[in-house]
Picture 1 (cartoon, rainbow, N blue to C red):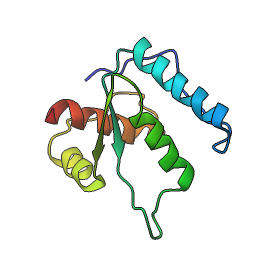
Picture 2: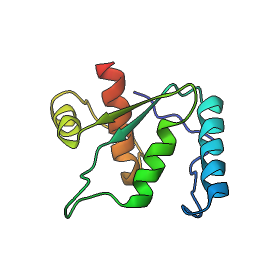
Picture 3: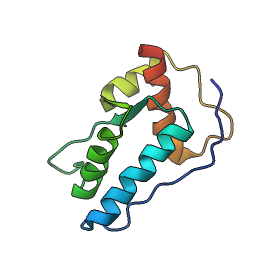
Length: 114
């Protein structure tokens, strides 16, 4: 697989209590998906309770991702990703930053599993 460099590397939600900021974030996601011809977003699932639970803001962001027009959203479990990485992934692209490992793994999993 090839790692492509894209113009937008970060979309930030400034204030999750501001309707204007939420709408702006959604618009930025919409523009990002159109600019990069994205048809599917993939999200690694997280616990809703307990020590490893996701926070309220991150769940809001996941919801906004699901609202992007023209895109579908898939959720993949950490166990499925781990099994895929061990059994089916040939390796990670050179110079892939560590913080992008899970994102790459989600994309590779989705491309391989359809």
